[in-house]
Picture (cartoon, rainbow, N blue to C red):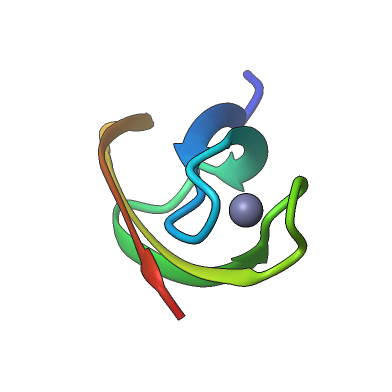
Length: 62
Ligand SMILES: [Zn+2]
């Protein structure tokens, strides 16, 4: 089974969507900093994983 999932997030700085890859092997909430693929500014991404599936994504200005 593949524990990498690609999700789309919306950049809080420029409003464009871009894809990031996350691991879903671990349950709980993961927080990471991703640089926007469009404007290159960092966004703080918080992802909730339950039973191998992404159940929540929030993006904030880092
Ligand atoms: Zn951006």
